[in-house]
Length: 166
Ligand SMILES: [Mg+2]
Image (cartoon, rainbow, N blue to C red; front, side, top):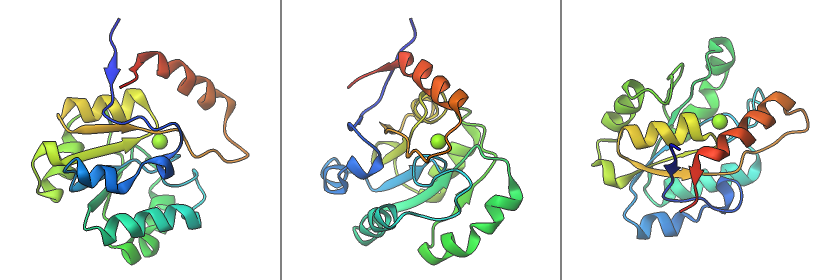
């Protein structure tokens, strides 16, 4: 069976991913998934912990871009003031795991593939996409709000079958 191996798979959300470890591994740029990786869907805000994680990463000179498959332009546009504050660009309607927009993100980061890590909570979009463009991958547990769709939860559990733990 087809299996995807991620370079990092912390037992927890992105908050369990240690920025110093990434830097020690020569990671210089991050491609971040949006929904459930750094933000609860439709919440429009970063939790204080996530804001702190992002600020730490930026302060350590990691370059960051968000790449999301989310297609809700009205919602995503409403995030602009927040993302501008952090100076983090976003590519929407990305169709991960397709390569096209991930390649655009790599171009923006302007770094060799081996210095870039994609961080996401979905195996068949984020991790597969990262493998497609030959960058490092980090599979994280989703940030979960009270209202998470049961279907999504089931889908995510199913997808984990495709993940080979590093
Ligand atoms: Mg996600």
